[in-house]
Amino acid sequence: MIRASVIAAASVLAITSAAFAAEVSWLGINEQNGTRVSTIRFEGPVEDGDTDTFLRVLQPASEGVGQWDRLVVQLNSPGGSYPEGLLLAETFRRQGVATEVASGDYCYSACAIAFLGGSERYPDVEPVVEGTLSNQLPDRSLAKGAELGFHAPYLNIPASDYTAENVQDAYRLAVDSISILIGLADHLHVEPAELPRLLAPGRDEAFVADDVDAIRSLWINYTDYSLQPRNLRSITRSMVANACINRWYHTERRSALAGYEIAETVRSEFELGSRLLGNGEEAFGVLTIGQGAVHTWIAYLPIAMTSDGKNFVWCIFDYGNNMPNVVYRAAGTVEELFEPYRDDWNVWTLQSRSDLLLRSREAQIAQSLRVLDMVPADTKLREVEDMIDMLQRSEPDLAKLAK
Image (cartoon, rainbow, N blue to C red):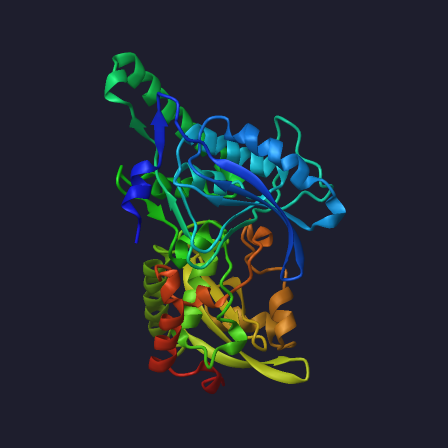
């Protein structure tokens, strides 16, 4: 549940100076799952000057490069100054600092914008010079039990300062902040077309990143790995369809929510065409395929149309010995889809063909297919395990259906 007190304190573009600023401190170096992490803690409201404070703390935290593998800023803040949040986001990316929100912590509005600046460390370990921003992959993590919420900036002007000039200045600051975010979005690995849902909430609302679609489309690493593909007792038709649709949109940093209706329309169109052609092809199938000296299975289904409208976009779900993967290929029929593989029917040929539909950013996404991709995109993160259990209980195991 969203904390009303947090929302009330977030997204403020105040005219007067704040009484409290964030506390920024270096927590030292510790080992996390075999990785040595140098951690900075940022706690409290985001206010003017916090970026300078962060840079002062960053200096000792970033020294001794050989002593650590990853540099992280841990955020716990209700928000505050939107312009300062933008400056922090740019600074995190320029300095190659990862961001994370730990379990029990929250990060709203200006803090959430700063969070988006989380970046992998640059190969040469040197920050990017002023005036440029690297295209380094994002490195931003959300733990189970953490809260992350986005909010458009709004005006918070004390009654004593409520003058036409102050209102105009605050309004201009809000517009400028949104303009800067739009210009910065692509550098933060956020699709500009997705910004409206981050900025749309009203004064007492927030867009909370608490479902699969928000996490995956924003390329946030959700660090709860308790549910692993190898531990699944079965994989069902709905799980495959969810994975195929989600990955198609999420690798492009787009919401997958509208993709479900598109996929259903495409399936209906394909089945109607098959009936007219009389070829007996179905829109979903499961086949046995070779994987070295053993056999595994694949499933296939159409999920969209190609941009020219001439072919279907087919998803091929490769179970791959407890390591699921999806690839996409354009074809008009099932016969056309698998024709290139007839002479070499194995998993590696399936994954390595040059005519696969590799999305423009697919090679950059740092996160492979996970169990949370196999549930409907609007599933709450806390409900993923229950959703998987329901699908497994209500649908047959595809491994038993492979031909």
